[in-house]
Length: 473
Ligand code: GLU
Picture (spheres, rainbow, N blue to C red):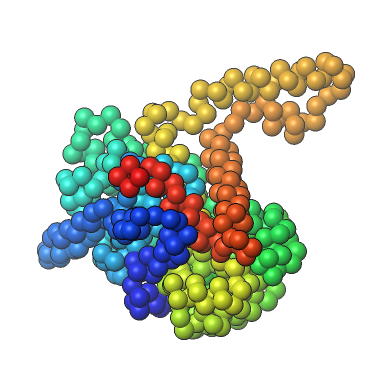
């Protein structure tokens, strides 16, 4: 999967998209520049001894905006990592948090490394050393800068970072909140692993629950009538695909992965493809469906909804003119370059932007951080009380009506809410509200022709950031 952000640079591409929203705000000269720039970026290089040899690694952590603290965003392990990526992705985090009302600034970082080339003990040593470099310089802390998993990292790395932080700051009563997306046994929250994919599903649901939105995009019918192409079956793509295949889901006609794409007009079984990938490392050879070695070609295939859920820059100047989907749902960060965004827009293709669509991860990270600094499980204080109240309501109704409550209703009223239920419903609510706000903003600001969803989302984000920045008021 080739990325094409190299042409403009990822940071420039994001900046140009922000410019479109800035042009709609009447701001003093220089404000836009102040909003777009990263507050600080650190680059660290450090040696690690691996099986008798020494290897030097380079990593970055960019802080885009500290209008709210802590700043938040993932740590990515990728051979493409560099300062430009860190800055672009940190800026996206600021806007993303603002769009979904998460009171954090934006940050992002990572290592230039291909994690698949290292074994677990090596990755542990590299991660612990990287974490120490960042912690010593104040680039990881519960109050100021809180990483999370991103491409190439997972719960496991967050666990190592947490331990490194605790070793260096044993006195910090909130040490557990220095990273999110950690294993549940180490203070993580149930539902964080699936959160980004689930958030994308809620974003899609919010869109399809709005008949006007569907019509404006040139689509017809409910989500179950749509034909979907999904790029990437990593953490985000897999959980999304899994949820899309539950009751009343659309047909996923193609899956694009690193080693090629699978196509089946009748619809692919995502669970089976994912299990096959885990077993063989790729999709090639998956039985009974069409295989295409040049996976990127499938981005251009005929479908209703295209969901890039992998890398940045996969829809670019060269292929944007051939995309046939009516709706592009940006589950990845920055999958459309600025040029592609303009080409798709001119062709009347609707884009649901990354800063809204994939915000579910950081939304649930926020819940995890709250749980950590509160030192209590979500719902612990009211769970039993709610269950008892539910029991009283059931008894009262039964007494008044002389009828028995069906078992399913009794269960649901008397069970007491589980933490995972709270997380999922709060995520659903957040995505719905954010979508409504974006819809309203694009109508209000449009003078007749509605704004595109991305510009509306940026407009919301910029206003919120401006309200919180006294130095720019
Ligand atoms: N890496 C995720 C993102 O890009 C999550 C960030 C977080 O939870 O802090 O949104």
